[in-house]
Image (cartoon, rainbow, N blue to C red; front, side, top):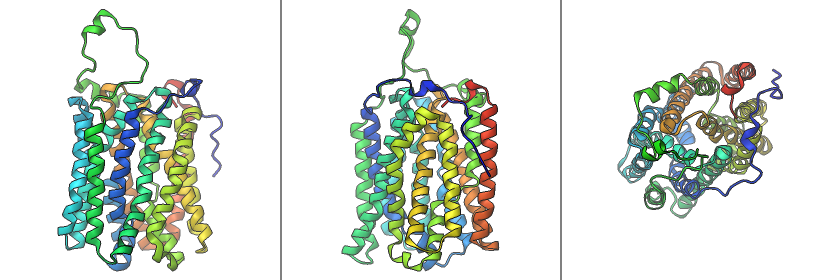
Length: 428
């Protein structure tokens, strides 16, 4: 299916500043918080697919359910956390609760003796992720100039993904030193989690200064509080914002047809059993590709249009499906799949947060971001469960073909919708 992005509307104001400001200190510190937290998380999750499928013998449908919970459970808590963050006007406090909840699950894994117990604790970790994500992204958006949103989110995601890349390597190194001692992995993981929490609590300012341009103060604004408290009217206004609803709706539609990296890794493993020996390194390769692409793709999104880049990222995902279905089990095809997957994540994760942030006032920014995350999380759950059922019934190749067809149609519909939108509703 041919899809052209040439005629999509672009707001040139997004990249109008001739000189890019330095990355705000708040963005860097939040990136370091995410870096250490992701080292902690990815130490535990890098080997989860191969463990569940090869050792516990889960069927494709069962693994799809587990993967769907892993991808979607964060959405259970994210909406309430975003609203609470805006209402309290304390995004750092709410984010700290989320990071802290994830950190305390690490030492508790030492007490878990069954797969159900491990899965339950990992689900708690995902709830912590749901709590922290929207307030953290709101702080990044507040500290960023509007024209630098994509770039600054790209910097944050690059630091975050460095942690995702280092996590499996650290776990691999620990198990090399003490083979089979997973308790040692849990202890080291807990240490990194608490370091990330300490960076947030001790170094990140509670109310990062806004980089958005402000109007000249008047007597009325001087007497008003620096930031109003969230009201029900503000929440209602989110659902009446055509730009916000359109972007979140498109994100949910496209996510329904996305296949998670866990399934991609298993497909590559199915074609080359030798990959089982280095399975955790697939996550490292994906994280490396994401890290390389995150900042330049964020910069391109600011200049070319964030929704255009977001849609183009899903075209890269179609390339992943094609590579996986046509894979001959060679190292080269695995590398191409990881590069395309990294490009997809770089063009969608931080870019979507930047695109949604551009439609939101500061008073309801965390609420809007959390709603977007909830929609995407629910769609990801549907995607993983659906793909698992398709794979179990008709095989993985046909499942990829059906998901690819659905994604191609969804991208085509999204391009058509964006073209027909009025300029105010289609910001970069």
